[in-house]
Length: 384
Image 1 (cartoon, rainbow, N blue to C red):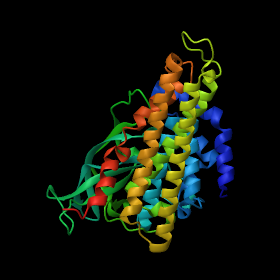
Image 2: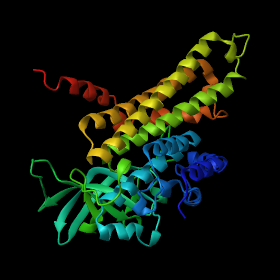
Image 3: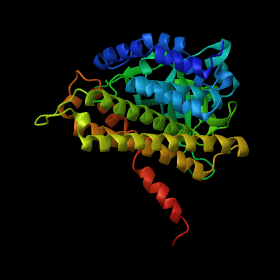
Image 4: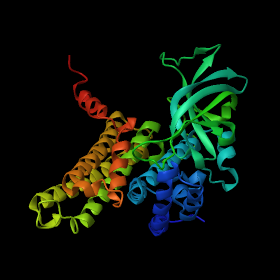
């Protein structure tokens, strides 16, 4: 039975204590246990976000933003996993042709899909498919996945094939998790619970129906916000993650300010005007970042509905809003460090992990400072 947005959000909030308990263990092991699969199924969080043809029920961009924001607010690694699963499953659902789609989603299956799109593999052309060899990194949530996406360069006789404008042909394979090998480890300062290790395969045959083009993908099903583009949807979701993390820092600061008395201070933190000034600015920044992300997402959805494609200005706006949201989260993390002091780095306080997760998440390629440069450069595209 399809669940409403309110039902899913309510179930997610109700599961917050369980998620945070899993998160504590994931900090130690480096990945969420298999319990997360049951939790996602019981809350309906993954299924709700999928395209309707894959069993989803999401109605608009606002629901996507708010649900992913809340998942990140509950726990940074949990929110990151939900993004990873949402992106890989959604793109598989809307771009795979019927045989490939049925393999994943037929008979009302609700698979967990993870993996990376970067073309770190090579797929030698074979009859009705490719022979794939490669190694991919940063596969968040791979331990609990049923399927994996893997980007690769198409080759023939070892030579990379080009499209009609001379660019290398990049495709994405959707592989059964059982057919690949997990490698490496995930030992980082933040987002420790994502289990973002590497995976590899050697001369694995992949049928053409289990692949889709990265640059020239054709929408087979789905609509609206799901079809804004692989890179754009990825950027948007990481903006949603930053919103949840930023709000979590604000709320943790509110709690700690009531009981934190810094050395050489006579009054608690909340009595200091310098703190109150920065706290109010942080609240304003979170509100501004959220408004920007939601506006960019709504505009993208509206443009897809009206035109069927997303123009460059709308794409740039999504990237800009997501980068700004992550910058805001990092700025607010710095405010917390500055005012809360050693309490912000003590493991007894939950804010310590939140701050580590923010700094790790900000390293993602989709929200790098280069986004600002490219956005500004576009204004001078006609200048000599």
